[in-house]
Image (cartoon, rainbow, N blue to C red; front, side, top):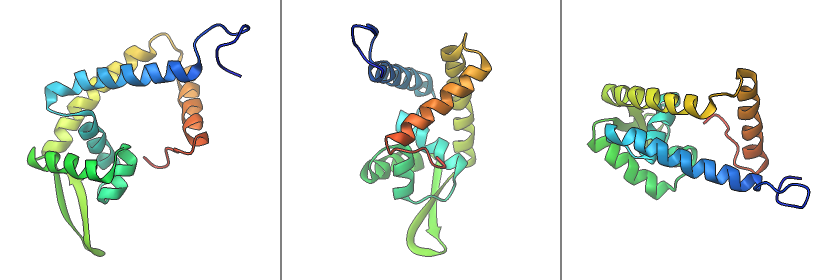
Length: 151
């Protein structure tokens, strides 16, 4: 068992993960802000690059925000010319979102910077250990019922 005890005086794993989450989010925010994006906007663009045509509700689930917040994020991305929305041909009332050429370009620049951040974070951890770490963290997410699915 992981946690603070007499035999394990180190910080709880949940504390370390939480600290990593907050630090990583702050640094991602600082990295993408010069490109005019917020973290939810960056996440939404990243999701749309992998899965164009998702509905508002599907995007919200994958971006880990509420559908109401996703509506605001999409409105901002449309205003910036990074996303366009069209009627879903199979569901008349549903709107499908996809990246514009400008959205793909901004996302590529941001992802290159976030890749640098991740390389710095993982510096000193061997490639096989990096893959194991990613697999173990993904397993933890799934065990807590927040699976990564096809993000």
